[in-house]
Length: 255
Image (cartoon, rainbow, N blue to C red; front, side, top):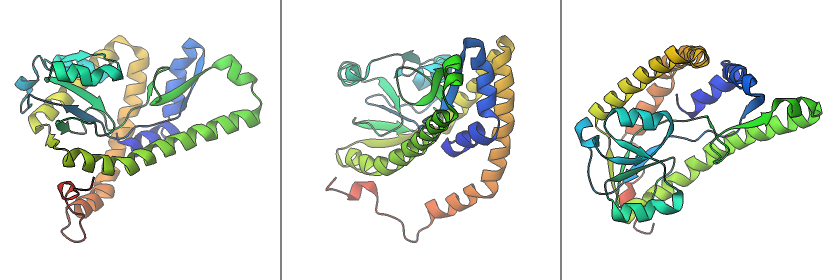
């Protein structure tokens, strides 16, 4: 799901309740605080036109996306942010995943890796916040309300900031010589197929995963039906209309 749909699932589709039933086993409670927008894959050197081109290609990526890419023959790696550019200089056949355009000579973008995510992590702010359940229960109701309100504001703020800052960042990239290339349909379809296979395997291993994934998938299917009727109809016209369109990014030399 995209960021709007994922937020709807968490707040009104039972997502919060479904996840906290899992977290209860670990004595914590979860709060949605940030949802990144569509992810990019960025890199330099080798171009990926088919699934075969992914074989041996190194990606700085983790989680289910890393598992999926490994199934397609790629090599997922964990790499600290300061080391990314140095690694690119030494090994051009490395790709990086991120929510925003990144400085590099070539960039492949797609919405497969994740159109959004709500991962939980203590190391990076792109997820839900976890708090000890007992400590949370001891807080005054007014404090709990203030905390949940702040989390909601942070979620909206993050999506808005990405949307506001990505366009000028994209223009700077293109002006500096970056080439934009979409992953081929064959790669996207293979990644999607592999993803669902992994989800099924996880469902067979974990009752919690099966429960949450089943509920999430049902909500996602309903969201897709609605978006095809409403949002997609508008987007297909607005983004492809020849009237009132902005100049191509490459025309902005001042960036």
